[in-house]
Length: 122
Length: 134
Image (cartoon, rainbow over all chains, first blue to last red):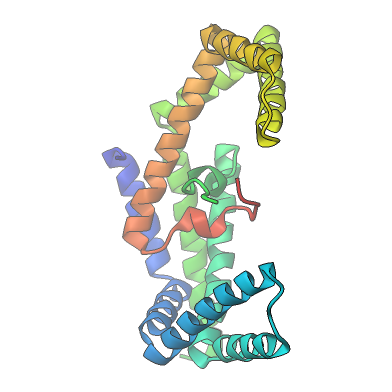
């Protein structure tokens, strides 16, 4: 819960970000990536296969075919046009948000993001 | 839109976002919780006894965690850690400093939750320094 004055400043900051084409491009790229059934299926398949591969690594039962399949799938995900678009958009927004965080942190005297982020879970 | 125009739009809106970020930080710095943190930090920095106690507590905490991490238990270390923890929270300067730090973290996280709700992505999570787990 934040007080009204801080809320107004936060709203202005949100509006300023929303007017930036970098932010709208990121949101569009994220939505497109999340809503694409083909890419979602590839990502799910990659996640499942990675898990299986990790458990095979424990008992050293993985084969060269497992490695090739995982690499192929990773290549399909990473070169998918919607994924490429998302990664580019994310790189752009990270620069902008990083600059905003630096601007806030230099005024506060500590790293805003490092302290405001949700606690890490292992 | 031509590339030059697009670049100009990005540049202008990025400057506006940076200025709005600074305004938000200035507003946060005006809050009671931030002022109390500043005052408690200054009091802590000026209190050699409190700093010494805090350092001893941190050292005992590290040692105890290390022993626990190895699956061990040393009553001597555990007792020392408990004694220092009690002393730390009983020391007025340390107690004030720790309480102000805790309140500040809660306020920062509340602000980030508000921003995340409006933006649809977690600003702090996306920009925090990369680090290991725990």
